[in-house]
Length: 335
Image (tube, rainbow, N blue to C red; front, side, top):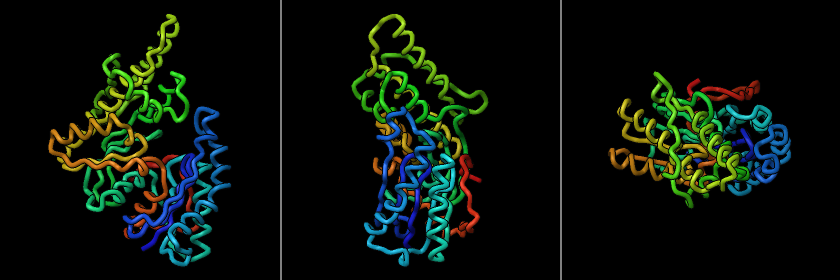
Protein backbone atom coordinates (compact mmCIF):
# COMPACT_ATOMS: atom_id res chain seq x y z
CA UNK A 1 0.00 0.00 0.00
CA UNK A 2 1.59 3.26 -1.18
CA UNK A 3 0.78 6.44 0.72
CA UNK A 4 1.82 9.94 -0.31
CA UNK A 5 2.14 12.31 2.63
CA UNK A 6 2.35 16.09 2.90
CA UNK A 7 3.97 17.86 5.88
CA UNK A 8 3.88 21.67 6.28
CA UNK A 9 3.34 22.28 9.99
CA UNK A 10 6.24 24.72 10.49
CA UNK A 11 9.13 25.70 8.22
CA UNK A 12 9.77 22.53 6.22
CA UNK A 13 7.74 21.76 3.10
CA UNK A 14 7.93 17.99 2.76
CA UNK A 15 6.43 15.18 0.72
CA UNK A 16 7.16 11.46 0.81
CA UNK A 17 5.88 8.12 -0.40
CA UNK A 18 6.00 5.18 2.02
CA UNK A 19 4.95 1.59 1.32
CA UNK A 20 3.05 -0.32 4.00
CA UNK A 21 4.00 2.14 6.71
CA UNK A 22 7.63 1.05 6.91
CA UNK A 23 9.45 1.30 3.57
CA UNK A 24 10.39 4.78 2.37
CA UNK A 25 10.18 5.03 -1.41
CA UNK A 26 10.94 8.75 -1.47
CA UNK A 27 11.35 11.72 0.85
CA UNK A 28 11.80 15.30 -0.31
CA UNK A 29 12.19 18.32 1.98
CA UNK A 30 12.41 22.01 1.11
CA UNK A 31 13.88 23.81 4.12
CA UNK A 32 13.24 27.45 4.97
CA UNK A 33 15.98 27.72 7.60
CA UNK A 34 18.17 30.18 5.70
CA UNK A 35 15.24 32.55 5.19
CA UNK A 36 14.08 32.51 8.83
CA UNK A 37 17.65 32.76 10.12
CA UNK A 38 17.55 36.48 9.25
CA UNK A 39 14.78 36.99 11.82
CA UNK A 40 16.14 34.67 14.51
CA UNK A 41 13.10 32.39 14.32
CA UNK A 42 10.20 31.25 12.17
CA UNK A 43 7.98 34.02 10.81
CA UNK A 44 4.54 32.38 10.29
CA UNK A 45 3.40 34.51 7.34
CA UNK A 46 6.66 33.99 5.47
CA UNK A 47 6.51 30.26 6.22
CA UNK A 48 3.00 30.00 4.76
CA UNK A 49 3.96 31.83 1.57
CA UNK A 50 7.04 29.68 1.07
CA UNK A 51 4.99 26.49 1.57
CA UNK A 52 2.60 27.65 -1.14
CA UNK A 53 5.53 28.28 -3.49
CA UNK A 54 7.27 24.96 -2.84
CA UNK A 55 4.54 22.39 -2.31
CA UNK A 56 3.86 21.49 -5.95
CA UNK A 57 7.52 20.94 -6.79
CA UNK A 58 8.23 19.02 -3.60
CA UNK A 59 5.27 16.69 -4.15
CA UNK A 60 6.18 16.04 -7.78
CA UNK A 61 9.74 15.40 -6.64
CA UNK A 62 8.53 12.77 -4.17
CA UNK A 63 6.49 11.02 -6.87
CA UNK A 64 9.39 11.12 -9.32
CA UNK A 65 11.84 9.78 -6.74
CA UNK A 66 9.46 6.91 -5.98
CA UNK A 67 8.91 6.33 -9.73
CA UNK A 68 5.15 6.49 -9.16
CA UNK A 69 2.19 8.46 -10.46
CA UNK A 70 -0.88 9.61 -8.56
CA UNK A 71 -2.75 6.65 -10.04
CA UNK A 72 -0.35 4.30 -8.22
CA UNK A 73 -1.23 5.66 -4.77
CA UNK A 74 -3.67 4.17 -2.26
CA UNK A 75 -4.17 7.26 -0.07
CA UNK A 76 -3.07 10.83 0.65
CA UNK A 77 -1.97 11.62 4.20
CA UNK A 78 -1.44 15.12 5.55
CA UNK A 79 -0.47 16.80 8.80
CA UNK A 80 -3.52 18.76 9.97
CA UNK A 81 -2.49 19.47 13.59
CA UNK A 82 -0.77 20.90 15.56
CA UNK A 83 1.41 23.64 14.09
CA UNK A 84 1.35 27.09 12.52
CA UNK A 85 -2.21 27.43 11.27
CA UNK A 86 -1.38 29.18 7.99
CA UNK A 87 1.35 26.67 7.20
CA UNK A 88 -0.91 23.72 8.02
CA UNK A 89 -3.69 25.06 5.79
CA UNK A 90 -1.38 25.10 2.77
CA UNK A 91 -0.68 21.39 3.15
CA UNK A 92 -4.24 20.41 4.08
CA UNK A 93 -5.82 22.19 1.12
CA UNK A 94 -3.24 20.84 -1.30
CA UNK A 95 -3.79 17.29 -0.02
CA UNK A 96 -7.55 17.70 -0.27
CA UNK A 97 -7.19 18.74 -3.90
CA UNK A 98 -5.05 15.70 -4.73
CA UNK A 99 -7.38 13.30 -2.92
CA UNK A 100 -10.47 14.76 -4.57
CA UNK A 101 -8.98 14.76 -8.06
CA UNK A 102 -8.07 11.07 -7.90
CA UNK A 103 -10.80 9.77 -5.60
CA UNK A 104 -8.27 8.69 -2.98
CA UNK A 105 -8.84 8.39 0.79
CA UNK A 106 -7.72 11.48 2.72
CA UNK A 107 -5.95 10.67 5.98
CA UNK A 108 -5.39 13.40 8.61
CA UNK A 109 -2.31 12.85 10.79
CA UNK A 110 -1.40 14.44 14.12
CA UNK A 111 2.15 15.81 13.91
CA UNK A 112 3.31 14.20 17.17
CA UNK A 113 1.93 10.84 16.13
CA UNK A 114 4.04 11.26 13.02
CA UNK A 115 7.20 11.89 15.03
CA UNK A 116 6.59 8.69 16.97
CA UNK A 117 6.06 6.79 13.72
CA UNK A 118 9.51 7.83 12.49
CA UNK A 119 10.76 4.97 14.65
CA UNK A 120 8.62 2.44 12.74
CA UNK A 121 10.59 3.32 9.62
CA UNK A 122 13.94 2.88 11.35
CA UNK A 123 13.03 -0.24 13.36
CA UNK A 124 10.84 -2.81 11.57
CA UNK A 125 10.60 -4.83 14.79
CA UNK A 126 9.14 -1.98 16.85
CA UNK A 127 5.46 -2.33 17.72
CA UNK A 128 3.25 -0.79 20.42
CA UNK A 129 2.76 -0.79 23.32
CA UNK A 130 5.68 1.34 24.49
CA UNK A 131 6.50 4.53 26.35
CA UNK A 132 7.54 7.53 24.28
CA UNK A 133 9.24 10.83 25.05
CA UNK A 134 8.33 13.34 22.35
CA UNK A 135 10.50 16.45 22.50
CA UNK A 136 10.64 19.26 19.94
CA UNK A 137 10.61 23.01 19.58
CA UNK A 138 6.98 23.25 20.58
CA UNK A 139 6.28 20.05 22.51
CA UNK A 140 7.55 18.02 25.45
CA UNK A 141 5.36 15.00 26.20
CA UNK A 142 5.64 11.64 27.88
CA UNK A 143 3.17 9.45 26.01
CA UNK A 144 1.99 5.90 26.42
CA UNK A 145 1.47 4.39 22.97
CA UNK A 146 -1.14 1.73 23.63
CA UNK A 147 -1.54 0.89 19.95
CA UNK A 148 -0.65 2.47 16.60
CA UNK A 149 -3.56 4.89 16.94
CA UNK A 150 -4.34 5.02 20.66
CA UNK A 151 -2.24 7.26 22.90
CA UNK A 152 -2.34 8.46 26.50
CA UNK A 153 -0.55 11.57 27.77
CA UNK A 154 1.24 10.87 31.05
CA UNK A 155 3.18 14.11 31.35
CA UNK A 156 3.76 17.35 29.44
CA UNK A 157 5.34 20.76 29.81
CA UNK A 158 3.50 23.41 31.80
CA UNK A 159 5.33 26.28 30.06
CA UNK A 160 8.24 26.17 27.59
CA UNK A 161 8.98 23.06 25.57
CA UNK A 162 12.52 21.65 25.77
CA UNK A 163 13.36 22.75 22.22
CA UNK A 164 11.96 26.21 22.86
CA UNK A 165 14.13 26.50 25.97
CA UNK A 166 17.20 25.48 23.96
CA UNK A 167 16.44 28.10 21.30
CA UNK A 168 15.81 30.91 23.80
CA UNK A 169 18.95 30.14 25.79
CA UNK A 170 20.96 30.06 22.57
CA UNK A 171 19.52 33.41 21.45
CA UNK A 172 20.57 34.98 24.77
CA UNK A 173 24.15 33.98 24.02
CA UNK A 174 24.03 35.32 20.47
CA UNK A 175 24.02 31.85 18.93
CA UNK A 176 22.39 31.95 15.47
CA UNK A 177 19.12 30.23 14.55
CA UNK A 178 18.40 27.33 14.77
CA UNK A 179 19.81 27.76 18.25
CA UNK A 180 19.25 24.29 19.66
CA UNK A 181 21.40 22.61 17.02
CA UNK A 182 24.30 25.04 17.46
CA UNK A 183 24.01 24.90 21.26
CA UNK A 184 24.40 21.13 21.11
CA UNK A 185 27.59 21.50 19.06
CA UNK A 186 29.11 24.12 21.37
CA UNK A 187 28.23 22.02 24.42
CA UNK A 188 30.60 19.34 23.13
CA UNK A 189 33.45 21.79 23.75
CA UNK A 190 32.38 22.80 27.26
CA UNK A 191 32.40 21.49 30.84
CA UNK A 192 28.90 20.44 31.93
CA UNK A 193 29.70 20.83 35.63
CA UNK A 194 30.85 24.43 35.28
CA UNK A 195 27.50 25.85 36.47
CA UNK A 196 24.87 24.52 38.84
CA UNK A 197 21.48 25.09 37.25
CA UNK A 198 18.02 24.35 38.70
CA UNK A 199 15.93 21.28 37.87
CA UNK A 200 12.40 22.71 38.21
CA UNK A 201 9.62 20.41 39.37
CA UNK A 202 5.84 20.72 39.14
CA UNK A 203 4.32 20.24 42.58
CA UNK A 204 1.91 17.32 42.62
CA UNK A 205 2.66 16.34 39.00
CA UNK A 206 5.96 14.43 38.96
CA UNK A 207 5.74 13.57 35.25
CA UNK A 208 5.11 17.13 34.05
CA UNK A 209 7.91 19.39 32.84
CA UNK A 210 8.72 23.04 33.47
CA UNK A 211 11.62 24.61 31.59
CA UNK A 212 10.80 28.29 32.03
CA UNK A 213 12.70 28.61 35.33
CA UNK A 214 15.75 26.83 33.96
CA UNK A 215 15.75 29.06 30.89
CA UNK A 216 15.43 32.17 33.07
CA UNK A 217 18.32 31.01 35.26
CA UNK A 218 20.57 30.76 32.21
CA UNK A 219 19.44 34.14 30.87
CA UNK A 220 20.17 35.74 34.28
CA UNK A 221 23.58 34.07 34.40
CA UNK A 222 24.41 35.50 30.98
CA UNK A 223 23.17 39.00 31.84
CA UNK A 224 25.04 39.08 35.17
CA UNK A 225 28.27 38.02 33.51
CA UNK A 226 27.92 40.70 30.84
CA UNK A 227 27.05 43.41 33.38
CA UNK A 228 30.20 42.62 35.34
CA UNK A 229 32.26 42.91 32.18
CA UNK A 230 33.34 39.29 32.33
CA UNK A 231 34.01 37.05 29.37
CA UNK A 232 31.03 34.85 28.60
CA UNK A 233 32.00 31.15 28.88
CA UNK A 234 29.61 30.13 26.11
CA UNK A 235 30.76 26.53 25.76
CA UNK A 236 30.49 25.83 29.51
CA UNK A 237 27.05 27.44 29.74
CA UNK A 238 25.84 25.41 26.77
CA UNK A 239 27.19 22.19 28.28
CA UNK A 240 25.70 22.87 31.72
CA UNK A 241 22.33 23.83 30.26
CA UNK A 242 22.23 20.82 27.94
CA UNK A 243 23.06 18.51 30.82
CA UNK A 244 20.25 19.95 32.95
CA UNK A 245 17.64 19.52 30.19
CA UNK A 246 18.80 16.00 29.36
CA UNK A 247 18.71 14.93 33.00
CA UNK A 248 15.21 16.34 33.50
CA UNK A 249 13.86 14.61 30.42
CA UNK A 250 15.55 11.31 31.24
CA UNK A 251 14.59 11.29 34.92
CA UNK A 252 10.90 11.85 34.26
CA UNK A 253 10.73 9.40 31.37
CA UNK A 254 12.26 6.63 33.45
CA UNK A 255 9.93 7.47 36.35
CA UNK A 256 7.02 7.04 33.93
CA UNK A 257 8.46 3.70 32.80
CA UNK A 258 8.68 2.59 36.42
CA UNK A 259 5.12 3.65 37.17
CA UNK A 260 3.63 1.99 34.08
CA UNK A 261 5.81 -1.09 33.97
CA UNK A 262 6.96 -0.26 30.44
CA UNK A 263 9.88 -2.28 29.12
CA UNK A 264 10.39 -0.32 25.89
CA UNK A 265 11.21 3.39 25.67
CA UNK A 266 11.10 5.42 22.45
CA UNK A 267 12.41 8.92 21.72
CA UNK A 268 10.89 11.16 19.04
CA UNK A 269 10.96 14.76 17.81
CA UNK A 270 13.66 17.24 16.88
CA UNK A 271 15.28 17.33 20.33
CA UNK A 272 15.75 13.54 20.20
CA UNK A 273 18.76 14.39 18.01
CA UNK A 274 20.47 15.99 21.02
CA UNK A 275 23.67 14.09 21.72
CA UNK A 276 23.63 14.34 25.51
CA UNK A 277 20.00 13.20 25.70
CA UNK A 278 20.68 10.17 23.53
CA UNK A 279 23.79 9.23 25.52
CA UNK A 280 22.09 9.62 28.89
CA UNK A 281 18.98 7.70 27.85
CA UNK A 282 21.14 4.88 26.48
CA UNK A 283 23.09 4.68 29.73
CA UNK A 284 20.09 4.81 32.08
CA UNK A 285 17.92 2.44 30.03
CA UNK A 286 20.77 -0.09 29.85
CA UNK A 287 21.16 0.09 33.64
CA UNK A 288 17.46 -0.76 34.04
CA UNK A 289 17.25 -3.38 31.32
CA UNK A 290 14.91 -1.29 29.17
CA UNK A 291 14.86 -1.45 25.38
CA UNK A 292 15.50 1.98 23.84
CA UNK A 293 14.76 3.22 20.34
CA UNK A 294 15.42 6.62 18.83
CA UNK A 295 15.20 7.69 15.19
CA UNK A 296 18.24 8.29 12.99
CA UNK A 297 19.14 11.96 12.67
CA UNK A 298 17.49 12.35 9.26
CA UNK A 299 14.13 11.34 10.78
CA UNK A 300 14.33 13.43 13.97
CA UNK A 301 13.27 16.70 12.37
CA UNK A 302 10.06 17.39 10.46
CA UNK A 303 9.63 15.17 7.40
CA UNK A 304 6.78 13.65 5.44
CA UNK A 305 7.97 10.02 5.62
CA UNK A 306 6.92 9.87 9.27
CA UNK A 307 3.51 11.30 8.34
CA UNK A 308 3.07 8.66 5.64
CA UNK A 309 4.05 5.94 8.10
CA UNK A 310 1.50 7.03 10.68
CA UNK A 311 -1.01 7.67 7.90
CA UNK A 312 -0.83 3.99 6.97
CA UNK A 313 -1.90 2.92 10.45
CA UNK A 314 -4.58 5.61 10.64
CA UNK A 315 -5.96 4.35 7.32
CA UNK A 316 -6.04 0.76 8.58
CA UNK A 317 -7.96 1.99 11.63
CA UNK A 318 -10.48 3.73 9.39
CA UNK A 319 -9.45 7.25 10.44
CA UNK A 320 -10.11 9.08 7.18
CA UNK A 321 -11.58 12.54 6.50
CA UNK A 322 -13.96 14.22 4.10
CA UNK A 323 -13.38 17.36 2.05
CA UNK A 324 -14.38 19.54 5.02
CA UNK A 325 -11.14 18.59 6.82
CA UNK A 326 -9.70 21.57 8.67
CA UNK A 327 -6.36 22.39 10.26
CA UNK A 328 -5.83 23.05 13.98
CA UNK A 329 -2.99 24.99 15.55
CA UNK A 330 -3.40 23.07 18.80
CA UNK A 331 -4.79 19.59 19.34
CA UNK A 332 -3.98 16.87 21.86
CA UNK A 333 -2.40 13.67 20.57
CA UNK A 334 -5.06 11.59 22.30
CA UNK A 335 -8.02 13.60 20.95
